[in-house]
Length: 420
Image 1 (cartoon, rainbow, N blue to C red):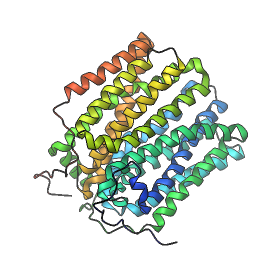
Image 2: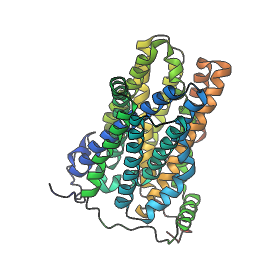
Image 3: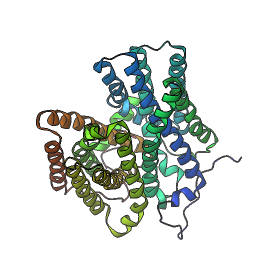
């Protein structure tokens, strides 16, 4: 099979449909590999959580599994973005993928041999999370390199859709594998899932693009922070992302409580419906971007998500809840995809990974803070009241930040930034 080459320049007659990027061999190959890898990631998460409940009955240790996944975001996401701008991203991604293969495979083997302890499980979960966080800025930064500029926004939506396909399939598949065998097999399947991405990266002939011109990672990081401080387009993306992520985090954080009357299978089905809604939203997004400005599209989607948030806290019917989450998923993908595209194009290529790392820190940090806050509020005032407050926060945030408009124009270069 031939090596993957850089994509050709787009043709004027290229379709602006939801599946247009999949017609490009380079992006299609990576997308299929990513779906398989994402499914393995969800299987890993289910397997780790289930294994911890078998190893100990301590709620603290069970909670540490999720904490071990999230902690690396706050520790290394910004240095990871700086490093990804300094080195060849293809080789960098090969190294991070190999790291995650080693961590997942080692955990799988230790589990099958019966040597895993609760703290060892937390350690390997942290190592996997660390690899994923270091990988993420470079991974997202290569999207413009594997698809034509005309299909860039649609490609980002398809990447988000791939994650939601995996969210719909991965937990159920992981549960089936664990029930039939044990968590160790799920961990090994996750390790195997990385090889599709590794094969793509190995065969990809990446063009020789400009990199950050700094000798030290601290200098690269400081240059990135200086750029963020002086670039209005970056301010808009990060502020809009922060306000949305905190307000919107209540739905996924409190869904296990909302779905409790329907059992574990009902919870899994509702997550799947949310993922299907995201898929449908990704399909509609290209047409919506033709009819509306990106700022108007995001504003409308936030209103829809606020209504879904309010409805999810009030309905007592499984059917209505599923319908609400479906539309919530459509709104979610529209917002996150637009924010993601804006984050990727708000800076030049040599600054892109650093900008994305800051965007991811704000997005995931906001989700973590919001989840904790809405959980505490629900403990005191109940889920319906909390969901009402969350919906109100989304609308209030939309009004508050309306002067920070999103655009998909070229990145604004800060005149005061001379080192990159």
